[in-house]
Amino acid sequence: MYGKSPMRAVLFLLGIQLTALWPIAAVEIYTPRVLEAVNGTDVRLKCTFSSFAPVGDALTVTWNFRPRDGGPEQFVFYYHVDPFRPMSGRFKDRVVWDGNPERYDVSILLWKLQFDDNGTYTCQVKNPPDVDGLIGEIQLSVVQTVRFSEIHFLALAIGSACALMVIIVIVVVLFQHFRKKRRAERAHKVVEIKSKLKISKNKNPDISWC
Image 1 (tube, rainbow, N blue to C red):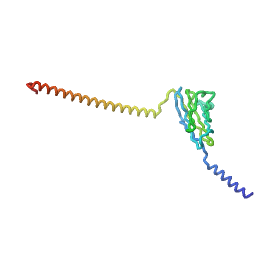
Image 2 (cartoon, rainbow, N blue to C red):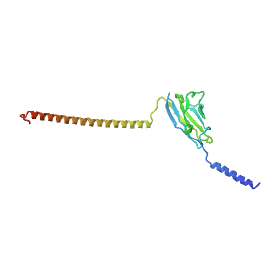
Image 3 (spheres, rainbow, N blue to C red):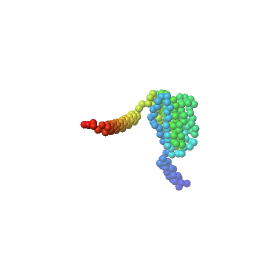
Image 4 (tube, one colour):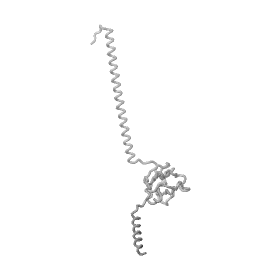
C-alpha cells in the first residue's frame, strides 16, 4: 500500500509535465484588418482560418459588430451547419453567407452599406477541439468615394507611362511609313518624267537638249 503511493505521485507529476509541454491547438484567423467601401454598395467581409482539427458539423462561426461611435456589441451572423441570419436589427435582410468551410472560408456579404456601418466587425471560429485563438477583426470605413492609395497612384503612373510609350512608337512608325511612301512617290515621278523626256527626244531628234 505504501509502496504504491510514491509511484502514483511520480505518475501524477509526470502527467502534469506532459500536459504543460503538449502544444495547445488553436484556431488561426485571417482577415484584411482594414477595409474601405463606398456608401450604397455591397462589401465582402473576408475571414479565413486554419485548424489542426478536421472541419465537421461542430464548426461554429460568429460575426459581431462594434460601432465606431461606441455602444454595445451587435449580432451580425451565426453559422453552425447552416447559416443563421439576424431576424431583427440593423443587419436584417442585409447580410448573407458567402463562405465555404471546406475551404476554411467563413466570409459574409454585407449589402447596401450605410455610413453608420462604420466600425469593427469580429469573426470568431470554433472547430472543436480547436476552440481557442484570437478573434479576427475588420475595421470597416464607409466613404462617399474610394480614396486612391499610393499603390493606385503608382499603378496609374506606370500605366500612363506605358500608354505614352505606345503612342510614341506608333507615331514614329507611322512617320517612317509616310516618309518612305513619299520618297517612293517622288522616285516614281522622276522615273515618269525621264521616261516622257526620252520618248519626246526620240520623236523630235532635231531638238537639241542641254
